Length: 207
Image (cartoon, rainbow, N blue to C red; front, side, top):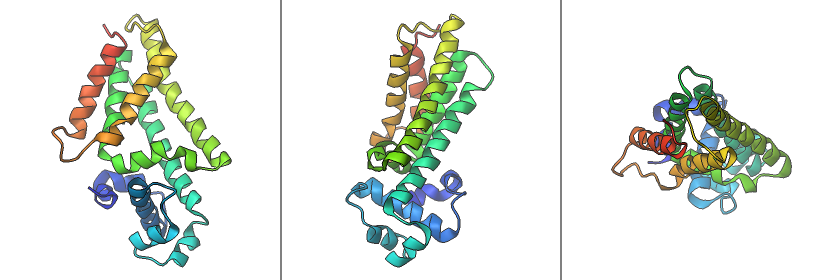
């Protein structure tokens, strides 16, 4: 499934803040190109061509190719943070909140895998200032998951000798779904999310 197809329904909402329509089309085209070819191998001409526009039209909306990647990364990381923050601040036990967060996080990485691959694996292509901004968001993502685990340990729900290491392992496990998930495979994003939620609860020794 292409990013264009992924934008039907929920994915369209992910780019709703990108206006006007031409800027949104260019952003979606950039996601497709970066996911398929990699950031460095993609040219602005490639992006404009996928959007059905001239290269000159791209510069009306984005000064550089890096600006496009930065916008994609920022929106994607904001979404990832919102998913985990919503779960962390929800009602229920730590186990219920962790399962909800992992399930939702995994569903996003599977259902929006083209976008997620760019968001999660092209960080090093950003310049120092943009990279620092995204790294700060990643730290907030880490903090939300770590906070749930700390709550579980404090409540006697979890047995986690190394909270920081376990947090990293959980996030790595979830993010990697974007690498391998196949829409034609045997599981849906919902099924993978449910599977991973169960795996993570076992990782933290949930009672």
